Amino acid sequence: MIDLGGNSRQSFATLRGELDEKLHGLSSQDCTAISAELFTVVFALNSSVGLRRACTDPSRDSASKAVLINDLFGKTVSRKVLDILIEAVSLRWASSVDFASAFEQLAIEAEATAANNDGTIDRVQDELFEFASVLSDNQDLRRILGALSGSPEGKAEIIHTLLAEKVAPSTLRLLTYMVNDLAGRVIDQVLEVYAQAVAARRNRLIVLVRSRSALTSGQAEKLSTLMIEQVGQPVHLNFELDPSVIGGVSVRFADELVDGTISTRLQEAGRALAI
Image (tube, rainbow, N blue to C red; front, side, top):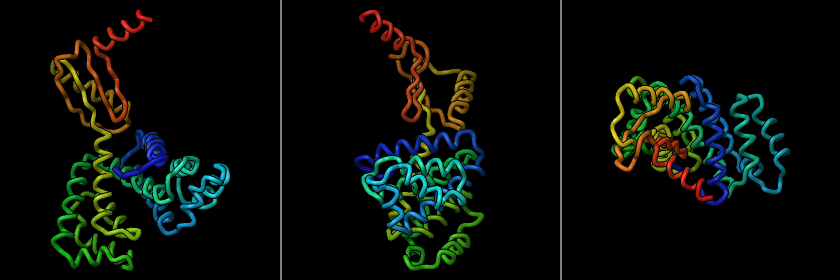
């Protein structure tokens, strides 16, 4: 997860919720397409200090910023990504760098969602961490891929030559994006950003289910189906037995808590009677 402070943290949370809505129910291919468009935005932001400042200037009103976004990206990205951009420029940011970092995180998480849909998100997470070891063991490779002046096409060709058919498609795409836009950063640090962003998306798709006794396979399957319908993509259910739970189940997903236990309903009824 990226480290954002001040207004940027809340603004990023808002954009993340917007991304969740845009990705809801989409295929892996469509998620990858949105990721590619978001990376196009990231590349533009990283290559232009003026653009970043124009997007985050608190003295400019949201309407004029939206006009700027439409002029720059209206013909190159989809309506979904354009909506996220317009929402982003209406929010407050602690710095213009935070703005670009937020879009990088969104772009990575969109591709991670594609990986989740095709069942490879765990593999992608592992392969990104493994690539860090490859760079550590091969300093020549690290130097070439980490060179800020290197040819993007040349770096992409190296990644494809080394890894095509050996890693998940999402891993290949993410590593290609990474080496093509280090934005002045050390490659090891950028790789860590990518790996943590994939992990953050995976963690958002984990559902914690608390109950007094173990659910039957039928109950677990039904709950899984309900959560997939709610989230719009596959989820992973973690089960926890809790003796304090009286009837029903407590379900926590991302920042949301759905508590259907009897004990909670009794507490709510008690509070209502006390009013």
